[in-house]
Image 1 (cartoon, rainbow, N blue to C red):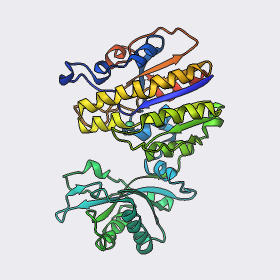
Image 2 (image 1 turned 180 degrees about the vertical axis):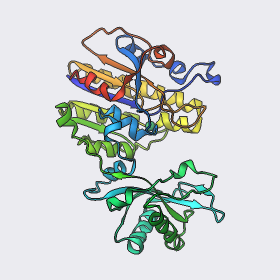
Image 3 (image 1 turned 90 degrees about the vertical axis):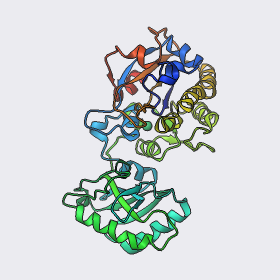
Image 4 (image 1 turned 90 degrees about the horizontal axis):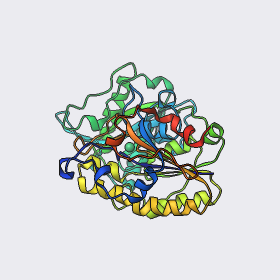
Length: 379
Ligand SMILES: [Zn+2]
């Protein structure tokens, strides 16, 4: 038996006026997905446990088969795992390069999207001047990591993207003053570079999550292709085989065929289960771009699912789980924690069948998403 998990990030939505009151999933032409749904079990899943933020880290952790309420320790430790940083005896903070105006307004949580090389120089300088008890590690663009002793975890920090255009509220709690001091001292370091960013912003902290490896938990080898550090970090923590796909850029023109072929090659090479996570539908949701969200779904159908189903049929019996990690409604341009439609397909079973849409699954009692992996594997 081969297994594939498809994650169109943030694809679930609400009825949209421009689409005649239909959701993107209802409006898009999705012949392959529809034919799978007609023989599958279709329902609703709660990917975001109560009390946790509706982030891709939380939703994907659930899809990977781990209860976020138990294993999620923060966003930064997952991103640190993507950078292969050792968190033994340390905690991780996300370290953004941001722009805060003189009047204290958060102008840009992304610091003008610095290029990776410049950002790496900045992080090196920060480590040289502010490092010691803490250390700074370069990531991508404006997204970096600071490691600190465990006692530094005691702070309430605000995600900078939630403060855009608002007063840049600093950290509070026992470690708040130390964090604020670092953020203040970073200004002198950043002032020496040609950058829109003028200081660092520390948030999203936590210790390394104690996640058992996927192979130990489920008894088979899993693989992953994704365009996103956060999801890659989950794959590292779960011990998945990870394939990097050229041209997979987390944008509308990503390399869909490359992601599809990475899954097919991985499964043919003996990996039992492959997870394909593609970001475009979420980006379209954040941008409020109706046309691109529909197109992202249609790209899944013609450029991923069609060839994937053909290839799987040539490998023997197979099962598929398909669901997004959360909804990203076009109207709201942000994530919601609402249950999302899921599909469980078994090539050897004629299931009850249904339509893979928000409306057709609205009456279903939501299942807990982190239990779907065991359902897929029938463990
Ligand atoms: Zn997401």
